[in-house]
Image (cartoon, rainbow, N blue to C red; front, top):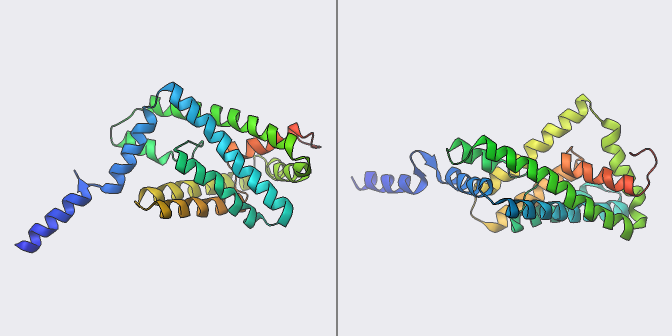
Length: 226
């Protein structure tokens, strides 16, 4: 009898209405993101573009000095870690949360489309401002910036590009799920670093990151870009 009581208590701590605690936490986070005011949403998403571009600056500096994409991907992790710590949003990063909230009946598809649209526009706006500063402040990086942009432009719309985009989406979703499955801030940061190494170190396709690099290459006057 005692064992049965203990088990019921344990189960109650792990789930409500059959939902695991991690799922509930993800739904809570998703509902908060879906219901942000437009002012908060535009601000956090603009800053998300700023933060991810700081990661791209670290990526370009490391790639320029070492020639290693994996080390550059590790340096890029500052961008994903800052997004996580600041609770900012990167287009497609963290979208597991709002979709979970909708599945739990705590949001609507219209709210999701609003989140996606504002995130994409403000990420690109914040990223454009920052990459313009990078172009002006680091002329020695123009060649590395052009090389990075050409990687995505040369592959373009192809099966390889589609595969790299899907892999990027899987990697980002995996990072989010790992973060949702733990209460340890250290483990969450490790997940961000691991995802950054795969995403940037593998030169996977990500709409915002790729676009910011291409915009930077255009602003630097790179040949064959734009």
